[in-house]
Image 1 (cartoon, one colour):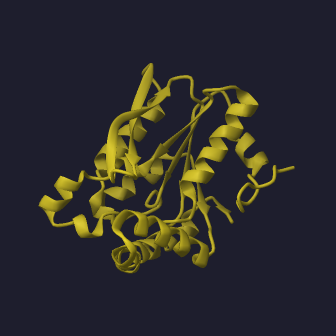
Image 2 (image 1 turned 180 degrees about the vertical axis):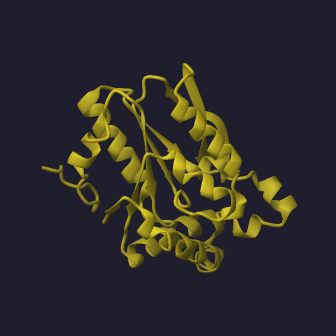
Length: 212
């Protein structure tokens, strides 16, 4: 039986998670629109696997670690829509996933996005060779326009995190108001986050499983 959710989260699909843990390495993609709770769900999955199979069995990699730096976005004229598909280093993400699939290095180091600074920190997440389940979470893992089409073939399975729109928007509003202030944060959700959410929601049918 699935364990109860915490803080309003739905229970974990334990049987499905257990089916992913074997002698080889599996890359599980976890997709959802902004504010869907992907990071929380990814951490819960990894914590469950580590509890069942031993510490260091699972790791989490966030697509947000591949945000282009703010100074680069300013130079490109894209800072005011950070989070759109063309504001990420997609080639860098693909390269990392390829290394994780090969699993022939003692450890691979992934970047981590620091939301308090709105910048990525390089080499902040270690994924040793022994890790058997890598949960890759992000918005555009199923997006197939341009270079993003190279991402899905590197993931063994992809789950979509389905969250009620009202809950998701409330989370986004809180997040962006803390980052940009009350009025600017609300404007950011309307102008940036919601159009991005529509792009992500259009990829829902490509997922292998819906977690709602």
